[in-house]
Structures are given as structure tokens and as C-alpha cells.
Image (cartoon, rainbow, N blue to C red):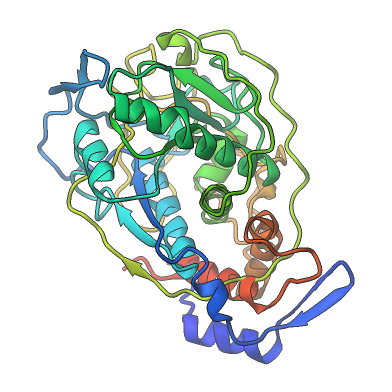
Length: 433
């Protein structure tokens, strides 16, 4: 059981003593500004934590539209990471932290599924829910299951044109801009670009992923990392690693929603539908991510969340091999402790299996935020858990790219990001029951 952190107590501690030094400027914690708490006011974000829990009786192989005139499986179970954590739980945990961050900035967040135990909807139902949500952007959160030697994140973009005119218009313009913003945020946060499956500069073009082809709002399909790779797994499986992913995703969304231009416009190679197969020879060498960010200041959580019953858009495209489980990995040990959800083993049927994912800049699990709780059976040595203040300090460092996306400069770090750091720490340490 994680330590119980009471948000009010944390904020009080911040107000009483927390200070942040950046570029020689020290800013004491002060009341949250209304401006930061409403930065994303009026914006709706649709979050789709990929896959679903095991407590359902749905037929995953039922055929639904793939958005291109064909059909594919309604859903897949997703992969199981190196140390036994189900992908649906990793996706769910990260989505909850992203939701907390976005709501603290004033955004309205709609979730494709309401828990991590039951059914979450077919890929077409999630796309329909995203389309009906009025979202400015939809994000499908996944993790891949490729051979263990491959690692890194990637953002899947649909091969154009898409038969549906509205989907084609959305994904060829704002959808591509949002995807590039996500890619840039991951690189800025120190995650390396995937070194396999035809990924070019963090982007992978595919025609076999139904979600984006069925979604008429700008869509981002992020594969956070390869759950079979030890370095990627260390971040996907742990609380602090999931927090790092959540901050990168939030940063990418904020950059897009507030109009920050993508760092680069490198054209994306358009591989064949099956290129996502982990067995394919590695494409371009992984991009060296930017150095880890520095300390920022956080917004106050004011949130209104509307969670629809329908499920969101993108469902991952099946990996060539009919299973999402990593090949060549040893039998995973007992599943580590995790926040919400049930650990479900999964072999991904062909419907929507994720791909290459990225892991933080550091090649060792220690790159993740301070409170790393390594999964049982992990080959990496578990770092000592840090205090909540230690966690907040680490979060502050990770929030630097977000501070820039919010229009702050290095000399204007105030209590805003400190408060967001504590909000995230509170969510991270909240009890699971």
C-alpha cells in the first residue's frame, strides 16, 4: 500500500516552506493564480486508456469497421509487460495522471472507460465516443509488446488519405500537428524514439490502425514504450515512470492546445500496414532525446470531468504476429503492485495492438521520477523510496517542458507548477482502495 498523502496537507506544506530555484531565481510558493487554473478552460480532451480489464464477457474477435472499407477485431487484450503488469492497467494509471494534470489547468476531460476492471468498448465505439465528445483532441494511450531488444516510444499516424472525408481532414491537419507536438514533448522529456518497426523521428505511419481512421477530431495515438524491454518496462511498470509518461503526454497536449508549433516538420515515411511488426528490422536509429528538463511551477487543480459511457477512439493495430505479448522474453514474474485495476495477462489479437514505444532518456530505470517502486522480480536494483518532498522535486524537474508550453520562461517559475507537482504527487500516492 502506498503512503497516504492528503492533498490539503501537501499544499499547506508547500505554502509554508517550499521554494524553487531556477536560473538563479528563487520563487516562494504562493496562492495559485486564476490564470493558470484556467489556461485550458473551454477545452475538452478525450482520453482513451487502451484496452480494458478482464471482468467482461465480450467477444473481442467480433468484427467491426476498420475505417477503410474492411473489418477487424472489436478489441484486443493488449500486452503484458516484462514483470507481469497488464497493459490496460499501465494505460489506465497514466491516463488518470494526465486527467489530473489537464483538469488542474481548467480542461474538461472525457474518458473512454470508467474503470480498469471491466469492459471499455470496441474500437469503433471509442472512436464514436471521441467524435461525440466535442473534444479539441483525442488521445489513445498504449504500450507496445515487441521483442526485448527493441525500445523507445512512437506516435502512430494514419496513412493518408483516409476514406472518410471528415476523418481525413482532421488527421491530415490538426491530428498531425497534435501528433508532432506529442513526439516533441516525449523527446524533450528525455524519452528516446523507437528503434524498430519503421519509426522515423518518433512517428510511424500505418494503415491498419482503425482508431484514427474512424475519428473525426484530431487524434493522437501514443505508444509509450516496449513492455518487453527492461529499460522501457522499468518506466511503464512503476509509479514514478508512469508519472513521467503522464507529464510528457500532458506537455504534448498543452503544446498543441495552446498553439505551440511542432519542433520539426520531418515527413513521416509511410510503411506498409504490417511494418509495425516487431520482427521487422529496426528502422532509423533511435533519436537521442533532449536532456531532462529543469524545475517549473504548477497550476491549481480545478476540474470538471465528464466521463461518457461510450469508449474513445484509437484502438491499436495488430502486430503482425497475432499476439501482443513480447516474444523472446522470459516468463514474467508475479505482477508488481499497482494503483487501480486488475493485472491481466494478455496476448493481443489482431484488432488493435500497440507498437514501438519509448522510454526515458536515461538508459537505466532510475531515470524515472523519485518514488520508483520497482516491480517484484525486476532485474534492476530498486531505488530507495523518496519522501513526498523528494517526489515533488523530481516532478518539478520533469515539468519544465510543460512550463514552457504554458508560456513561462526560466525566470518566471512560481507556485503554479509547484502546486501541480503536489497535485500529481497526491494522485500518485493516493490509496488504491
